[in-house]
Length: 305
Image (tube, rainbow, N blue to C red; front, side):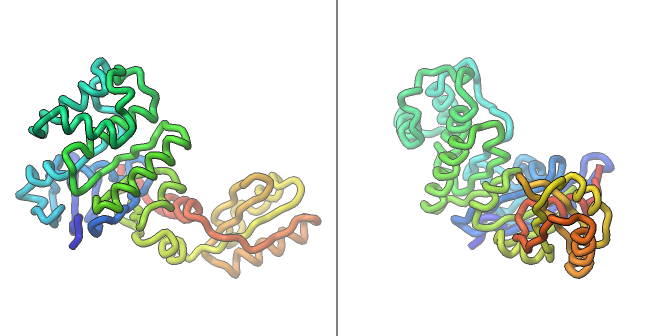
């Protein structure tokens, strides 16, 4: 059974179509990364799935409940973590969790709060004022509040923005632990390393779903070829390659250039010509990255605003 199974979702604000016939399915216990540029419709799609917004068109189910008629039931079984820290900064961690426990009518409150604090390593910080927490600890508090009522689906909207790499890794370890226990997770992110930790990814750009599948499937289906250029004065090489037939991306990576295109023959011809004019520069076959694919998607998408 799919935890999320929605078809043709549309959401308009005035004359702007923010989500344009989006179809998505997420299996129970799966972690799916939801990717796309700022303003692409990720947050609006997530809010429709958790019952906070009503679609203008489309239908489907979330956790077996009808998206259009059973929004209240969906809300009770979903944990939704927003982009912005949304708890009371002048209350302690414990007081914030007590407030959330009462919202969900969890009894006894103290048991739920204590267990949640222990599960996420927050017990020693129970009496710390939330506003004094670092980004990583605020993130941990937000996650604790999201899972305290034992949801079946976790919707995370850019949960690791602004936290350090160690906190991000610990957060993802926790997410995989939760998923191994049967929790389904849909997470929006801009980080390629996080996308690669998901079971599958879906890419949305300006309201339209462009790709879905495993990371390997999305990279393979993009049909891109990547070459690595090494040598001296790569700034001049990059300038020489810009706009040449088959060359769609030229990006510095450390002491090399990554050159990417969808027409392999034209790309190779342009690189061979460049080598003749730049002695000492070498070109080798490279591996197309997820970031290369996403840059290609963004270049080809039209802003719906």
